[in-house]
Length: 105
Image (cartoon, rainbow, N blue to C red; front, side):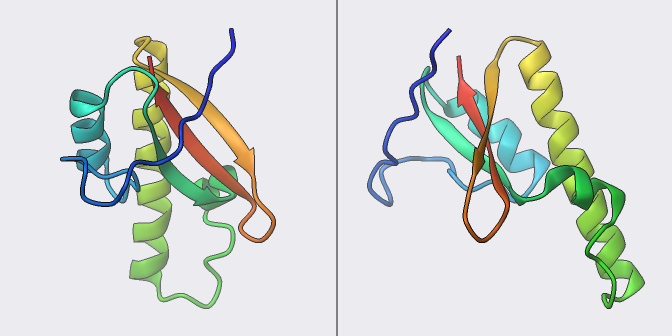
């Protein structure tokens, strides 16, 4: 199966975000997105963020919030993939590690 990632539409042409910052935004995107559209649900190293790696120097509350957000988004994306709603794609970037994308099926 080949998945094509489209160019992002112009700003303001969609009713939902392409950059996901919460599980609620991800669910909204799942409801509104059409086949072939994509969103980025995480930027960085998702597995490390889920384990709290890289939170040294942060206060405990911020570190916990970041770890929980990474875990919640990864879990939501995983279950959407298991339900056949999305294909999950990992794209390597130069500076930030990886982009984690969900492509609507």
